[in-house]
Length: 111
Length: 110
Image 1 (spheres, each protein chain N blue to C red):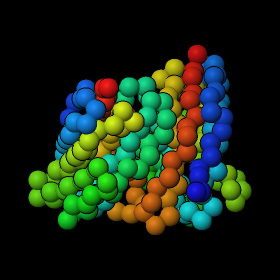
Image 2: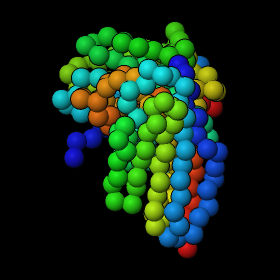
Image 3: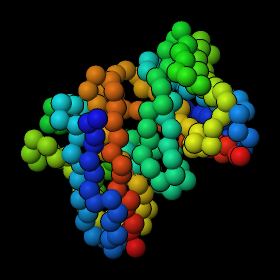
Image 4: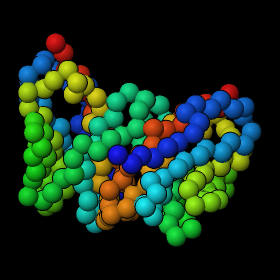
């Protein structure tokens, strides 16, 4: 079964540092997403990406966040200057015909 | 983005019990409805889509009431392996961002 792959599985970073979270979506999917889940809270939408541009973003997705599809397979989320409150699970997802598949997530810990 | 509300948990039930989860959504433009399951510190996994006519998959039955903006999930003959958090999820159409409820935790006890 096709899967969405995320790396790393866990990243610890110091406050103020930049981090890049990586995702390889399912190859024939055209829509890509980032979600985050702070411990004990609900899964929250960050951004969606289609046709090489952002199609929608939430109020969480401010100027410190950016996304990129640098080649035909990877989809990245960059956090420019991490804050303690960015600590969360970050899930990448992709969808084709309305079927969404989630990656196993990256646990980001900001210290 | 409008909200999805779910029963507060946790639900602690014995093996073999029937358990029901309820969910309401506030965005009347929602068109796609799902129940996801999330194990501790894992990604959400699709349990089933929910259709207007109601649908069943083995021990799981999902129902949708568009007029009341209400979704339900019934689990019959609970197994220990059903222990997880159940997430009610909606979207306005295919491929639009999913909106998640906070989830209801289920613990099935031997």
